[in-house]
Amino acid sequence: MASVDESLTPTAEEQLEFDPTIKKKKKKSKAVSFSPDDLDDVAPQDETPDPEVDELTDMFAGLKKKKKKSTASAPLDSAEDASAGDAGAEDNVEDFDFGSQKKKKKKKVADVSAFEQQLEEAGVNEDEDAGEDDTFEKPEGEEEGEGEGEEEEAGWLNSDREYSYEELLHRFFKILRTNNPELAGERGQRYKIPPPSVMREGNKKTIFANLKDISDRMHRPYEHVMQFLFAELGTSGSVDGNSRLVIKGRFQQKQLENVLRRYIMEYVTCKTCKSISTHLAKENRLYFLVCESCGSRRSVSGIKTGFQAHIGKRKKMLG
Amino acid sequence: MSTSIENLKTFDPFADTGDDDISQPTNYIHIRIQQRNGRKTLTTVQGLPVEYDQKRILRALKKDFACNGTIVKDDELGEVIQLQGDQRVKVMDFLCTQLGIMKKNVKIHGF
Image (spheres, each protein chain N blue to C red):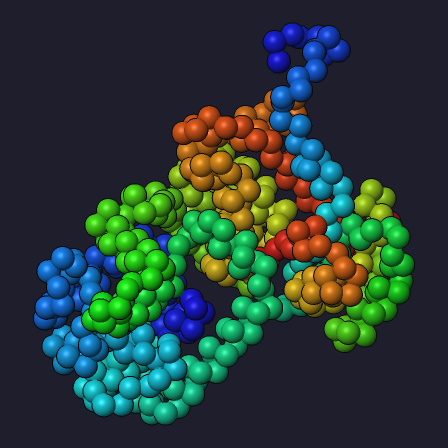
């Protein structure tokens, strides 16, 4: 579900990816609460009335709605102003060309989303891996899920049939999440790690500028992180004068992010309590991950480079 | 950890044996990627079970993915399949569907 949403606003997604979800959510609930809400007094302000009214009352809310609608593959044509605004926003976000026609844009978006889907299918297991405990969280995706729940809820709250367990459970968790997210098991915001800032140096090298910052945040020596990065990426590199990491090869921010995520899962998070406040202890050549919040210990495998193919000069291979 | 002499340690039955941890890494299959010049990449498959005929697997892989590849003999790691291009996901699929290797025993490395 995240993939479709991502395709809508790719750049925004990337920017947001490392931000905590709370802010976003707060804003949303507020926006919703603007709208007239007279369903019942017991329910808190996070119900959505019918979408039409919402759209007309609030531009922001309209934008949100539109996004949701389009992800459900039902383009909304009635609200002209809202859609126009949305298109403008899309333009803004995507590649700053206001001049291009809407039709074309739509098609492109669809293409991208299809591609993303393919990617998703192809990389199912990696996603699973990442999804297990996502350190770099994806606010858009989460929001999407919530939105669906909201729509459903609006439907069943009006009817006076018996509420099913599932519906009530969803409702409970949603209210809990809006009011105090700590209790709803959202540990996401505790793991705030700045996005890797990646630059290209020349044609063949990549600079990873805030490695020190990130490894400090994870309480790991940057040498360890560096070792892992090199082993995973199958390259080599060095640290320059400003303690930036120079990696051989071309890498994008997203790729490094994935590798870092894997590092965090493997060497930082406690498997028992999912806490990030851990440290690595070395005993008899073995590394142990010791959790500082629950005290559990587990052994982690050392970083192995594995097989490295010889690239380039043939002479080396023979010699 | 209390005694300094390693041999005199008593066996602690409740200690974390890490049994599955130890048995697993021996038969992990690592799929790696390496960047070459330009946009070119190389995929290596390391640690395939010895009971499989590497040559035949390679032939099938080459045909399926329409790429070239070789078997490289490494001193420590045994035979490693090398394929041209980024074939990581496809190799993984192949291993899981054709050879019946569990997904959790395959590790994909790289970005």
